[in-house]
Length: 198
Image 1 (spheres, rainbow, N blue to C red):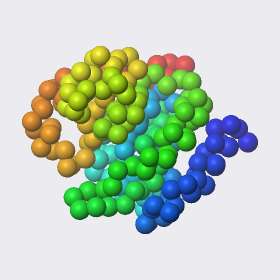
Image 2 (image 1 turned 90 degrees about the vertical axis):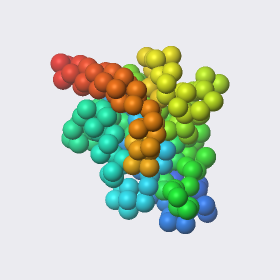
Image 3 (image 1 turned 180 degrees about the horizontal axis):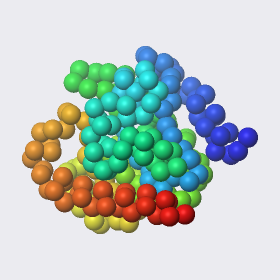
């Protein structure tokens, strides 16, 4: 068994957070040694928890549109690796989902990222991913952090969550879709074309 497969099996069997998860465990993530793009989001929602397929909801459709890629490309693990901050659905509260469980990222992210030496860009989607990976370099608010996206290049690109709940934010901050999205699409396409040329 390869190291990646062994780690995947181990993480899929993780039950560290079980006492805190009303809906039970169902770790959802994607790792692959050839992946070039790493998507670090929040945590699976209920639909993803039930299907076991990452970003298989309205947020995922918008994310693919932002990246300018097809569903086939998005779900090709040799292109996109997917590591939520919390691998399992954390449950719901009034107005949305609970925050991702804090146990996942410290336990699993580093060993998984070590297995993916070809990652060239990391998309940090939402405040939990940005707080964890940017640490002291993050700004006071998500809006300020995303506005300063160029300062985190070439490794990281901070983004808002593509959830329909963020439609108001997107209307208030048209610069994101006018300036950041075209850059992301160009970079993602470059990486895919680079892989195709091998």
